[in-house]
Image (cartoon, rainbow over all chains, first blue to last red; front, side):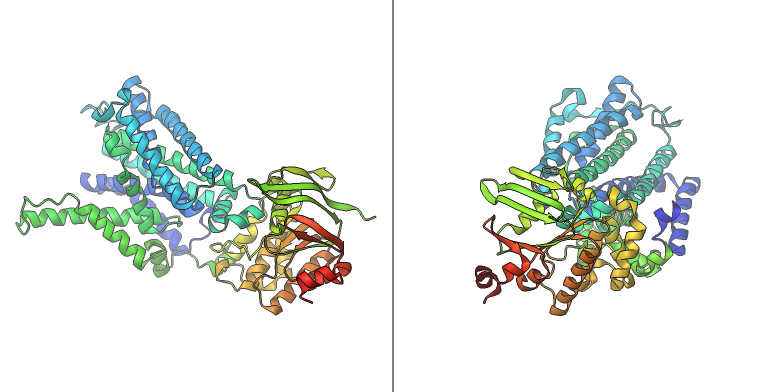
Length: 350
Length: 238
């Protein structure tokens, strides 16, 4: 089992992965509140990034509407908790189920009519957009005024996993386990029949068809797994931030945000989305500091608006990576550090 | 009369309102090499795709090993023992050679004898064995065609349909490919061969059909067609 899941890693790669997991486990012991909350956000982006990467990287399906699935999970769980007092596990089942069903419906629609590539991506945007407008007008979900989860000073101190009410450390551990769980799931899927079929369909649908692969069904599976994962991230998001606005949740920016970490880290790689999140977010934070410092030192005036700078910077970073390391930073780092076996000698190791 | 492995009767296939195949009837005896000859767009690939279950015929029947498989989904058809080597070296470029072969063996039929089938493929194609860890897209055209054939064999087919296996390959490699087809046939695999290289394929074929505009216009033994005036003029340039 271990060999099947981690057979592609060298000894150094395994050691690095173990060290990484260990560091994540002990981090709350010494990290400041700030570091902890940034790491929580990183892990959240790494988690949704893996969900998105499963579709594009493994199955070759580009989604630019992943906020839809994440938002369904977020709104379903928040609604059930805020209005009916039901715990997030119920929200996860309902929201996850709903997101998977919507994912299946969109893919059935698309693949039945052979909508592929960019057109499929447009379809995902369209669904995310009209869901946003629908939620805008849904009174029971708070509409444009937003949906809020009850929080008390007391609940912020606890460790109530069942209701996901508690200290920042609790949220940190929840998303850490989700992120590592997603990583294990992706590793397992990639070596299963579905994983082989996904990559076969991604590389060459015609040849996959000739081998008897049901392209329609396997593409649909990819969308369903990915949307279920994104909905899970949505449940976490809702309970972590405690407020939901359709404008924020279903926006195209949020969908694009999910794609950045895997693009930077390496689409189609297993660890790329995690690596990408750990590179991008801290860079964004450093940039924020830098601007604050420049304003503090009055090198740039306080009246200068710098709201979009982070986005601009991320845009430049993504463009640079696409141009310089199109396969992502992670494959490049692996080659440099010897963490993954070269394909040539992988078989002997198995 | 030899036992029939695959029998096709009255087959019509339409793409929308356009007929791709009309009234096609073909008989593939067990252990034969049946050649299908025709110009581009005559419906050869459509026929293969219909047999495989990828296209659904409007009318007619396809019987394989005594079972009516008309309208079956392609994974069931494949699992019953029909394999296809699609046109134009269709490999999974981003996967290693070994992973390409794995994809061919996920259906129950292939799964059952996977290890043995893989040994056999590597024995048959030593070059693939040398490169089992290599990313398939980086191999030469000939090697990719061998991989496509090997991957098809991983499903342990009884009938293999070759769609233009010599397309775009160097003459020496073409010879090799035809040699492999003969060898597979000698080992008991029944073959349907669709080829532009009419002279060679008719020499190999036990029987052959000429397809024009979706209809069978001529059939006979390979030798008969090889000496048929119409075939000579249209396909052999004589």
